Image (cartoon, rainbow, N blue to C red; front, side, top):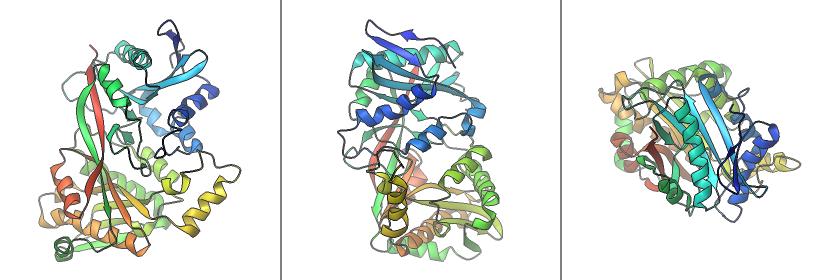
Length: 385
């Protein structure tokens, strides 16, 4: 990591994060900036520490990451990250680096100092374009919230203040892509025509639950399907098995095998769906802390009181089946089975996210099952040559 301290202006210092204390300040800053926002949910501090730790997050094995704090008058007023992922594919438009973790007070000077520092760091490493926010990877939290500030985010989704987008655009960033979060209150059955499609396409298709006794093997299968299914998407960067395994380990306490389903077509592993209980419901008032009483509250809400919403972060079908009727019907079958299972467990609200704006097929499927867009996140891009 860069050991220098960049002076951004007469009263703003940009400090590279190097110590545990600085990392703690970096993690906690958005909690103060969003303290007035009733829809902001502080992430668990323990999870954030692991996500930003090279020792615990396998993303660091193929990426270079630098974090900075903006300090004014001895007070933290902003933060940003810059990262270079060796697995990012070459799209022929020049070397690209990423920014992320952007949060700051509503002050143009602070945003200018943060972005200038991040861009200089990327430029010094041969990058000519900056894209983001990615926190830290395109396979994690992506985009800046630009619409849907009136509701809290679901598990593993971001929430930004309304002024941030304008401040980012003032630094010369323009839209690269939008991604959507769709929501549907599934208190009733899925639309009849969807159920008909799903049931009609079941011949030769087997749906099975995640086998927790073979958890690591199941995660490896999921990773293979995921990387194959998503390989044609904009910005696709393969997720390593180590990254999937780490996420699966972190989510194992809340993963419900009844809502993590694999599909086989004529005996061959062909697709999957993952529905995650919306843990954000349970941690909303914990302010990131699990001690001294947070664990008790969390366990009570997860196991006794229960949650009411689920998020679908992952759905994939192997590309070899995309042109077949069974493969085209498989997303409907998986959603039908997954949502039916979720409803049977007491869940009433279903989110599908995130989905690229130009992923026509998936957006059509999610719309057809009765969902509507309720949050939009924007990925920005800028030439820094």
